[in-house]
Length: 92
Image 1 (cartoon, rainbow, N blue to C red):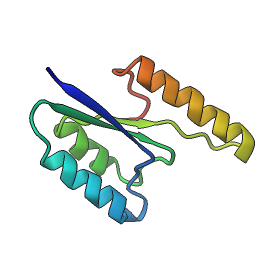
Image 2 (cartoon, rainbow, N blue to C red):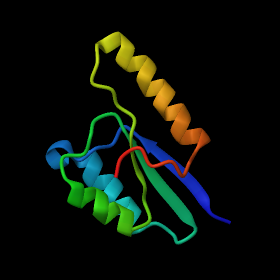
Image 3 (cartoon, rainbow, N blue to C red):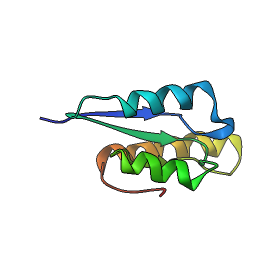
Image 4 (cartoon, rainbow, N blue to C red):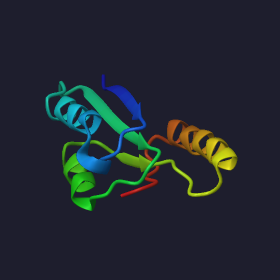
């Protein structure tokens, strides 16, 4: 049985420590784990998304470029969509 994990608020902006850490976790995860990412900011590099996809990880962009108050509601709405429709690709 596959165990699914959705890591929220990870992106490759500046290739930060969080991105590096989760990338290493994904590279070394047990075969029966599915780790996907829900990002509040878009990835800077399509190559990073492609690499993660090759490892079996889906990358979902749940962000919103609008005002700060509306943005919080859109994060929540988009995150709900990802959780309900786990195979729905919001960003590739």
